[in-house]
Length: 345
Image 1 (cartoon, helix red, strand yellow):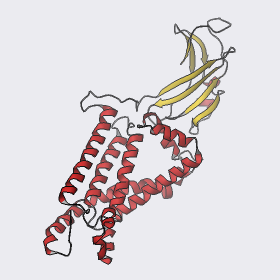
Image 2 (cartoon, helix red, strand yellow):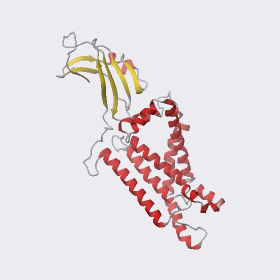
Image 3 (cartoon, one colour):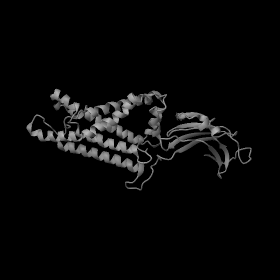
Image 4 (tube, one colour):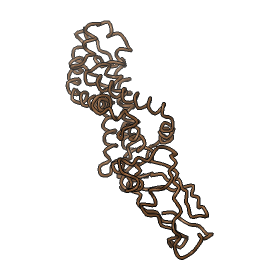
């Protein structure tokens, strides 16, 4: 698509582009504000989100994404959580990119590059958090809409009320620069009508397949019945592995909270050791669990200001640790544990 803004023959094209810019003005400003809001909360209005010692430390948000993250991102998140320098740099860079891209979209500066960044953010957030949302899959909705909005802005640019236009007026020779056209939004992209149509249709196909495909994976309701997804966003589930039973009745186990809503922690108040018939062998109450030995394996299990002695453990989604339960009283009048398999509940 070409636009000779100084030629009379191009005036109809310019007029259409102007109208498109006006029509998309609300989309551009709100898309920008969404990402500006995310970055400004951390840098300006709620700086505790960037404080590793604060209860609202941004890394906790990443941690809650681990159980349902797609395409191996759970391993990337886990690696970052175990390497603080990489984690902190990632949090700062991600927040700064959101802040800058959002601001540039609102003021119409380097519009296409900013829109492309918003598309990248949407894809990453979908793959990380798209499974969350107990009632209306709000994380999927946000990422799906932002991807479509960013794609539209990338294709259409920002011909109205944008600093890209100010730059072009001051330096009109930039109209002949392919780099300027791809990065900014004051002129159409430097493609023929056929090339532009192909680009638009390929991006449309990607957005539809990605958004509808993830929706079907997370909730069904496209070609399959509705379901709660491979990872439940509502019901907490703790996966126990690497169990060890000591002769004195102590139990060691690796615990991973791999499902449930991140809006509320899981309350681990009691535990039972049962035999193959389901009969209780050992019981641990809240007071006994408060004396558990905890070895962090992925990230700490935050207690959100709740004393361990009163509430035992309150891990959030994505928490993982090795627990050693103290020796309890063996039930059923036996002085030793059975030789057969036992299960911890």
